[in-house]
Image (cartoon, rainbow, N blue to C red; front, side):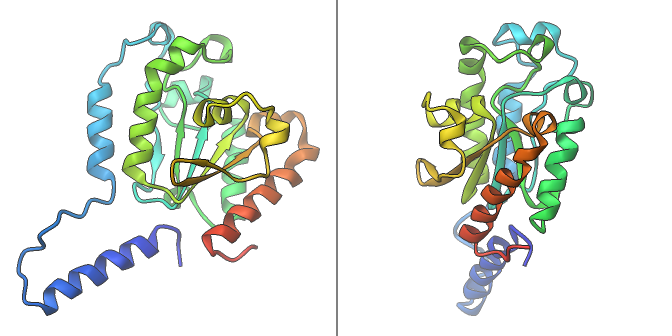
Length: 218
């Protein structure tokens, strides 16, 4: 069963339950996250809350399944992402796609976002004030999607989401928590382009995630 399909099945069961009771109008609104994500994007608007807006081409909000069980979070958009307004579409993004596909999934099954939504100049690390300006929007995205597991990609994403300074080499491979959501820190795809030998470590992390989700490990 595709990721996210289990949530849709549960919704259908609820609807059939109310139908059997003769209820013509479901008393609760059931949102798969789409409306909430649109509201977050609308609130962000043509954001000028930090200095990153001065050099951007496009805001890179995020994309994917609004009710995904698995969410990926990186640090920020690069040159290709800034040009296209989509997360992880450059060379590192192609590597992330391969990981997602190897997990038996596609982009339409997961949700992908970043800590900051505008490209830092020269792909430098986002600064504290820039992170502070964007973090509330990321938290709202997480709340809207309500994933079961988040995979953070790289040091910055793990440090900012988990509010820790523990080195990524010690964090990766070990489940952490963001509220009631499991978090698996792992290496960023850009790091893997420079250190291909560590792809096996990221695949091991992905296998742990699949196991937690109750999905078959390929």
